[in-house]
Image 1 (cartoon, rainbow, N blue to C red):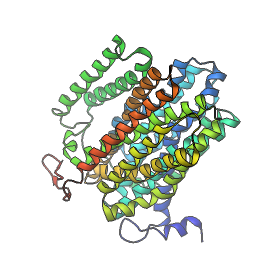
Image 2: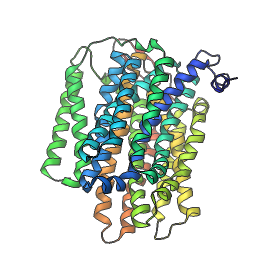
Image 3: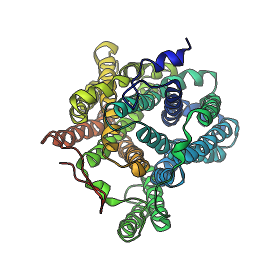
Image 4: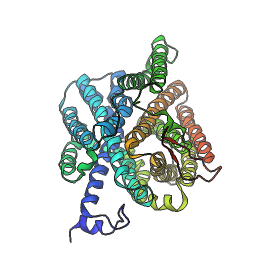
Length: 484
């Protein structure tokens, strides 16, 4: 018996039976793509010193190898999610995946820093369309409840594993040459594209009702791009500089115009009523904190391990191995736990583990112990991601109608990316201002930011336990979710 048939017979279907081989193959393709998206976010970090040396980039230019991807991804996610709803999720997914493969190839072949940054920006844009399209395909294929929870736990495990294992894979590839960190995703993306053409069902080409909200698309995309640009450049330009303040002010004005426009247009890009759901709002805030705090922590840990302790790229990558393995092994089981205990409780436990994991690293010193500091801290962070990441995705899409699943997915992914950009800028500023006199205290001060964020996330998660939620009720005139 073929392996995929054997696996298909082991997994329940959305219709109460068992998933057939084709459905399992479609889920595998979607998981492979979200793995690549997440991998690309974290994988480039270890390769940055080699890229800088080979292409002769300045430090300010080098940060744009990372920030260019975040700018394209975070700035266009809302547009990507709604485009999937309007133009067809399968169509948007296939086109964006093809662009991702081409941009990956270009990134591995260029010999100019500006072209490399441009390739990263294009990859970020393509990911802004593949991620919400893939997630909305999942949520419209599997019925809300146990089947969708299992599917989402597998899907989000792939994303969390890609992000966690990106550093490890990058450490290995960088030993061969930094270009391999860009070229490795190319054959995987091509194979995924071929498989998607065959296995992703064509019925996902059905479009949501409504026209095109050009004002909303223009203002929210420009606002997100300016916001991400401002926070990425703030550590260099200065938080109090005219450029930073003017850029943030422009982003705020465009956001205000967007909110007003969405209340007046017939077919809004973002139906603001979706934010009246407490669980959806908590899920989005939760991902801001989960992803944002970890991006900041990861940046500090890279500086600590490589620049202060002088570990190699591979040694640094292996330090993250406990968290990555834990996420990869356990996240697929989170759907069953969500069915039994509910997402709110899992998010509370995950938030507590997140804050505790960061707090462990406040004890870092000149000679850190693997047994009592690094491994326990990484295990706690792995538990946090394994519990929280699937649960937040489930909570953010439950109770949402099929024609708005792309919107809900785009909102959630935007929360993560914008949270990561903002928190990274804050952590970088804290680290830069405290490490010159005493590096250890500087590292501790920067990690304290992640600890505080973890505690805030725990408080937000606890508010979801105040009252047992009743099933969401759709109000047809306003399409408002009234979930208590």
